[in-house]
Length: 351
Image 1 (cartoon, helix red, strand yellow):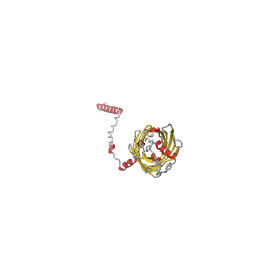
Image 2: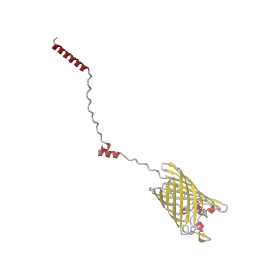
Image 3: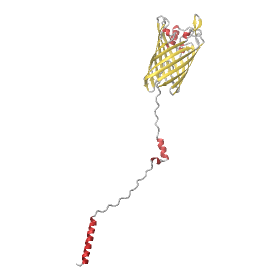
Image 4: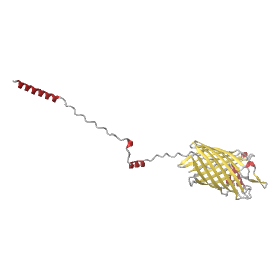
C-alpha cells in the first residue's frame, strides 16, 4: 500500500475518533436569562386617592363619643329646699316630744305633703300642704289643724360643681285656727307646729296672715360631698283675725338661714346634718293683760341642729326613693327650756 493511501486512512480514522469523543461530552448548559429588575413601588403617602374616594371614606368614619359621666350625688337636705327643679312627691313628718317645765309632757306631729313638677329643665312649680296634731300637756288643749298651703316655683341651674336655685312663693290663708275667736285646740296646735318644724315653716302656721316668700340657695356638689347654704325672707300681711291674740300686728317680717352638709358613705347611703336659724326682722307684739307689748328678746330667734342618714334607692329607670330619718334639737331658749326632741321621717319620691 502506498504511503498516500496509508496517510489517507489515518486521517479518516482520527476524524472518526474525534467525532465520537465530541458526541460523548455533556452538552453545555444554556445561558442564564438576564435578571429582570424588580418594579419600584410608590411610597404610601405618594399614592393620593381620588377626591371622591376620600370624601366617601371620610363620610363613613364617625368619631366615637364617650358617654357623659353621671352627675355627682346630691345630699338632699332635711328642711332646706332642694337645689334643683325636679318631679317629686314628698311626705315629710316631724314628731316632737316636749314638756312644760312642770313635769307634764306633750307631743306634736307635723306632716308636710309636697308635689313638684318640672315644666322645663330649670323651672318647677310646687304646692305644699300641712297638717298638725298636738297632744298638749294641759288638759283640754289637744287639737288638730290644717295649716296654710304654700304655692310657688323653683328656678335652678348648675355650673360645674356649683348649683344655685331661687324660690318665689306665697301662702294661701285658709288654715284652721284663724279668726278673732279661734278654736283653742287648733290655735295651740299651730303654735306647737312651729316649734316641731324648727320654726323654718312658720309662715304656714301663721294662719291669719298672707305671706310672700322669697329665697335662694347655693350648693357645692362634688367628690361625694354636698355643702348648701340657704336664706329666705318672709313678709307677713294680716288678712284675718284683726282682734286675734296671734295677729296683733298688721304686718311682720321674718327670716330663716340654714346650712346643710352631707356626705355619701356608699352610693346608696348618705349622712347629712343641718344648722337652722330663724329670726324676726321686725319685733312682733303679743297681748299681755289686754295690752300689746313686744315679745321678749329671747323669743325673737330660734337655733336648732339636726343630723341623720338617708338612703338612695333606685326603683325603676329614672325613679328614686330617698327615705331618711333625722334627729333635731334646739340649742337656745325658749325652745330648749321645753326639752324638745324631734324626729323627722322624710319620704321623697323622685321621678
